[in-house]
Amino acid sequence: MAQRLLGGTGDPGDEARGEGEQRPAYRIKKREGTRFWEVIDPAGELVCLTAYRRGAREVVRRLQG
Image 1 (cartoon, rainbow, N blue to C red):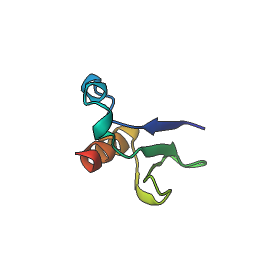
Image 2: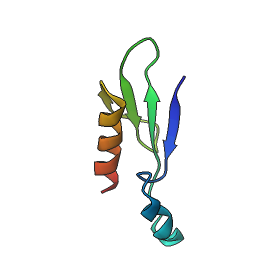
Image 3: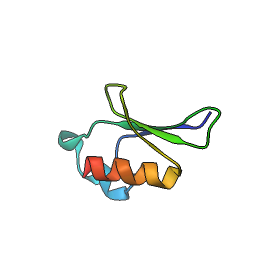
Protein backbone atom coordinates (compact mmCIF):
# COMPACT_ATOMS: atom_id res chain seq x y z
CA MET A 1 0.00 0.00 0.00
CA ALA A 2 1.48 3.30 -1.05
CA GLN A 3 1.19 6.07 1.50
CA ARG A 4 3.01 9.32 1.88
CA LEU A 5 2.88 12.01 4.54
CA LEU A 6 3.24 15.52 3.28
CA GLY A 7 4.25 18.24 5.69
CA GLY A 8 4.98 20.51 2.77
CA THR A 9 5.02 20.36 -0.97
CA GLY A 10 8.38 18.65 -1.19
CA ASP A 11 10.09 21.89 -2.16
CA PRO A 12 13.54 22.45 -0.67
CA GLY A 13 12.23 25.86 0.40
CA ASP A 14 9.75 24.23 2.79
CA GLU A 15 12.50 23.41 5.24
CA ALA A 16 13.87 26.93 5.02
CA ARG A 17 10.57 28.45 6.17
CA GLY A 18 11.34 27.76 9.80
CA GLU A 19 9.47 26.06 12.58
CA GLY A 20 7.01 28.89 13.22
CA GLU A 21 5.34 28.35 9.85
CA GLN A 22 4.58 24.61 10.07
CA ARG A 23 1.60 23.64 7.96
CA PRO A 24 -0.80 20.78 8.66
CA ALA A 25 0.08 17.53 6.97
CA TYR A 26 -2.22 16.23 4.27
CA ARG A 27 -1.90 12.56 3.36
CA ILE A 28 -1.97 11.05 -0.09
CA LYS A 29 -3.04 7.43 -0.02
CA LYS A 30 -3.74 4.88 -2.76
CA ARG A 31 -7.31 3.56 -2.50
CA GLU A 32 -6.97 -0.20 -2.34
CA GLY A 33 -8.42 -2.20 -5.19
CA THR A 34 -8.80 0.86 -7.42
CA ARG A 35 -6.67 3.20 -9.48
CA PHE A 36 -7.67 6.22 -7.40
CA TRP A 37 -5.68 8.34 -4.93
CA GLU A 38 -7.19 9.89 -1.78
CA VAL A 39 -6.23 13.25 -0.30
CA ILE A 40 -6.90 13.16 3.44
CA ASP A 41 -6.82 16.22 5.72
CA PRO A 42 -5.09 16.37 9.14
CA ALA A 43 -8.39 15.46 10.87
CA GLY A 44 -8.55 12.24 8.82
CA GLU A 45 -11.41 13.32 6.55
CA LEU A 46 -11.40 12.64 2.82
CA VAL A 47 -10.87 15.84 0.83
CA CYS A 48 -11.00 14.37 -2.68
CA LEU A 49 -10.24 11.43 -4.94
CA THR A 50 -8.07 11.78 -8.00
CA ALA A 51 -7.32 9.40 -10.84
CA TYR A 52 -3.63 10.30 -10.81
CA ARG A 53 -1.10 10.74 -8.02
CA ARG A 54 0.13 13.88 -9.73
CA GLY A 55 -3.37 15.35 -9.40
CA ALA A 56 -3.43 14.50 -5.68
CA ARG A 57 -0.10 16.27 -5.21
CA GLU A 58 -1.47 19.34 -6.99
CA VAL A 59 -4.54 19.41 -4.72
CA VAL A 60 -2.28 19.29 -1.64
CA ARG A 61 -0.07 22.04 -3.08
CA ARG A 62 -3.08 24.30 -3.62
CA LEU A 63 -4.56 23.58 -0.20
CA GLN A 64 -1.29 24.50 1.47
CA GLY A 65 -0.93 27.53 -0.83
